[in-house]
Amino acid sequence: MTIAAGVAKSLRYKVEATWGTAPGPTGAQLLRRVTSDLNLAKETYQSAEIRSDYQLSDFRHGVRSVGGAINGELSPGTWEDFIAAALRRAYVAVAAITGASITVAGAGPTYTITRAAGSWLTDGVKVGQVGRLTAGGFNAANLNKNLFVLEITATVLTVMPLNGVALVAEGPIASATWTIPGKTTYAPSTGHTDLSYAIEHYYSDLDESELFLGCKINQMDLALPPTGISTIAFQFMGRDVTAASGASAPYYTSPTAETSTGVLAAVNGLLIAQGAAIASVTGLSLALKGNMAAEPVVGSNVYPDIAEGRITVDGQITALFETVAMRDYFLNETEVALAVALSTGSTAGAEFMSFTLPRIKFGGATKDDGEKNLVQTMPFTALYNATGGAGVKHEQTTMAAQDSQA
Image 1 (cartoon, rainbow, N blue to C red):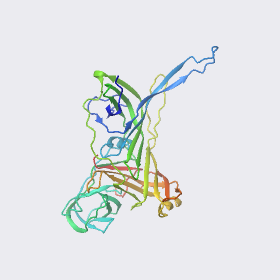
Image 2 (cartoon, helix red, strand yellow):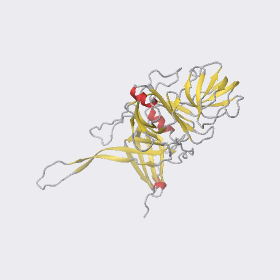
Image 3 (cartoon, rainbow, N blue to C red):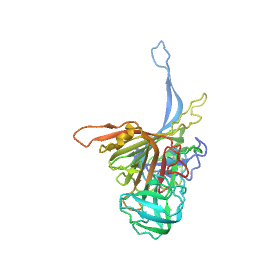
Image 4 (cartoon, one colour):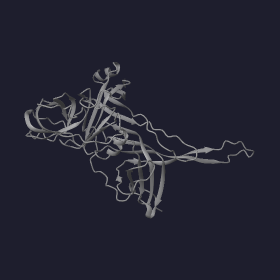
């Protein structure tokens, strides 16, 4: 007897052209995972009749739906499709800034990148992005290094190297190029996408397949522990499932191979609040919620649609209680810009991802106790940044993201 094993199970997905309808069998993507527990659920109804035999006479199945989560480790390029779907906007490349005259100054840990003409803001650079000096006669220590943008004016970027290795003061350097690697996205104010996926579990040891249809992302969770690998999870709502076996399984043929990028850990990264790096953070978690809903209708055992709701983001920071600065953000109801960038290693140009919340408010600042370093727990809610957009340092959004492999 063959019993299905998790290592023999593969996860494949493809965006649907029509919600709840399987797309063509080619062009799917294999996905790395820790777990995937998508399953079909049914509402059930039990008879309430009072009978002379004192017993239950019937039990019925009702509306079908798909639910569950895909859990994984955070890595560049792997989760591009699902993050974009959760934010409801595709990843888009930021045009490189070329032909600039640039001066690098500072003695660390922060540096300034100053251009002689033009505007970083007009050219679309944002706080929380990671950029690189990729062309020009720079010292090798300055070229192709991940630089986390902490603050911006029209002509000056304040940056910090993700790998902690010093830059070299020099310039002006002519014909220089500033590049934003990969692509960026954010929750938009208009033009939202409404994507659904057909997600397949293929059990190769049984030659059996389950294709979950109409799957929309209702929540995305990020967890960045102080030690260990950063994780990501997506909770889905879907319409139905179809099963196949033997010659009909798997449904998706010749899917694109899984990504091979390294995983991200908080030991290789930076967290900034109000333009300043925070060295005392012991953990960060956040949840982006799609607040979706579905309504049953008479005459059908599946939902006719899954309606998208507002995008809301909340989370929590835990940090060593070493100054009152973080506490006072809560006491004074200060609006704070928060950004985090993580890389796959300590090399200058390691692959990376970043997440930016331009406007958050803390909802608490509780401290633990004991014979230990005291830790402060600060839950927060992210808010829509109505003053952001083109020509300013933040996007007009609740949350933005960058992926060097998108």
